[in-house]
Image 1 (cartoon, helix red, strand yellow):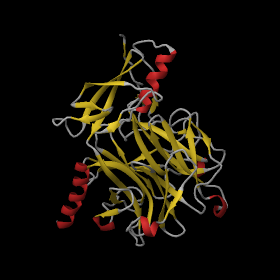
Image 2: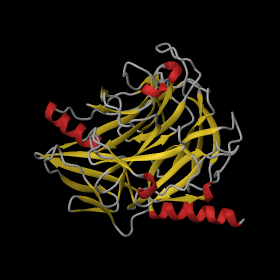
Image 3: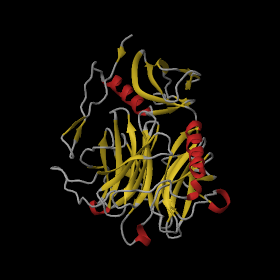
Length: 404
């Protein structure tokens, strides 16, 4: 049996403050069409970070024979499970067999079991509202405050106004926090954190900048979000700029330098606040229609991709929300998804559930009865799944900080 080894994209940085990242292929083995399709499908279906106990993907419903080639893990009933002697962040290499051919998948990080979600948000009714805050949930409905709804830190550079904070998991398991800088700024805030308690290396990163191919306003970079794409060993940062007509993205290797921006999608009108969710092979995005008058257009709608996060090409004409809304984020439970968003005219969260991510069928959650969100006037939140050890570190860390 032939083992097919695919080398990943190689993205090279050149220059200084305007570094450019260009992907290229370098295949050790030439694949026929069917082999390439199988490899690409499985490679995209595998998440960069796999929680212990997670189901491994099939090939379009057909079973795949999975084997752990490297790392302290085993496969049980098609679930990848950590061994007792595994590290907290265990590097894994998997091999999948389909139709007698084997395919190798590297740069996978196996985490402990997921126990809940950590929320980053800003808001409140005092002068400190433009600062990052944290909360967590185990079930997606009942939220607990961290640091008593107070800012976990304050910015010391730039505008010192931190909006729309979001956490990005790095390929080693640690995190970067990224956030909007004030209102009209081309740069976003970046911090590094190993424990979700101490945030270091505060810096500004200009993502909205012009290139020979694309003239930008260099004015706005709203609601940045990011994720690691193991297929190309790069982080993707997405953000919005109404002045530039919509949503854009950059690549980065280290959150210190970024590629020139490129347009993420084209709806034919101005959109902002897009949040991307990956479920297996499929990518879905929820966006805000930013046209005016706001009373008519300022609602959320869905977009889907036929390829990956660069292929959003189908957009729903149906609006999910029936009133002005923005700042959406998703979280996944065992049996459904919850879509939270800012009901900003009433300064509160609202939530909707759906059983099918790409469905236009959403059911309103009665916030007062079913969702307990004790934050004061929360705004534009984001969530990231976490493990028990990560939860312990962040909750105990801020208790200890309060005791100082």
